[in-house]
Amino acid sequence: MSVISWIILGLIAGFIGSKIVNKSGQGMLMDIVLGIVGAVIGGVIFNFFGAAGVTGLNIYSLIVSVIGAVVVLFLYHAVSGKKQIR
Image (cartoon, rainbow, N blue to C red; front, side, top):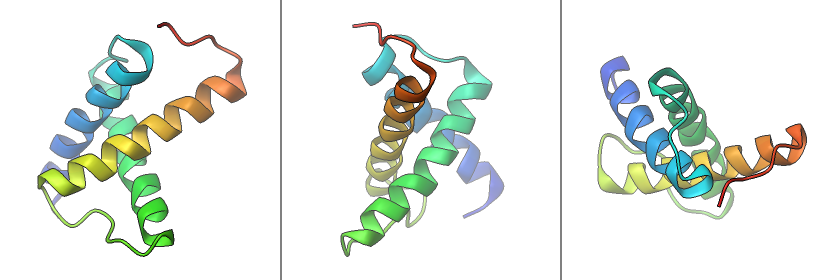
């Protein structure tokens, strides 16, 4: 995947993941970073269970990235002690 694809996937996945956890976005830059980190974490999780990780700019990769972003946000809130807004 190209850098532009990672940024687009990261922005969309980070935004969706932060909406699921916080009900509000984290800001464009943080959503991109969250989505890219989420894609890496989601890929590791999916590979652990025998499925493919991020395969390109497609719906499957978006789902993997969103799941990874949600995991990253839950871990961040658990470590930092911040309450999740529901």
